[in-house]
Length: 77
Image 1 (cartoon, rainbow, N blue to C red):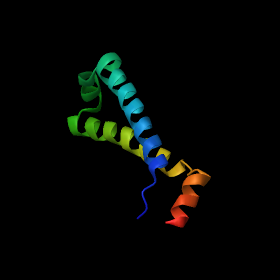
Image 2 (spheres, rainbow, N blue to C red):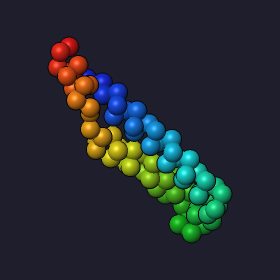
Image 3 (cartoon, one colour):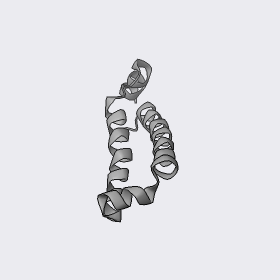
Image 4 (spheres, rainbow, N blue to C red):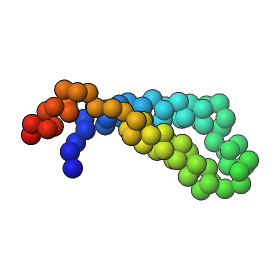
C-alpha cells in the first residue's frame, strides 16, 4: 500500500481543527452534561461525538487529490 502523504497531512490538519471546534462547543457552549441529560445516555453522546470527528476526517481524506508531482514519483518507484 502506497503512503499518500498529502492526503494524510490534509486529513490530519482537518482532524485537529474540527476536534478543537467540537471541544469548544461541547465543553464550553453546550456543556457536556446537558447533552447527556438531553439524549439520556453517556455512551450515545460519546459515540455521536466520535463519529462527528472520524467521519468528516475520513471524507476529507477520500476527497483530497494527490498532486501530479507526487503521482509521478509514485509511478517511478
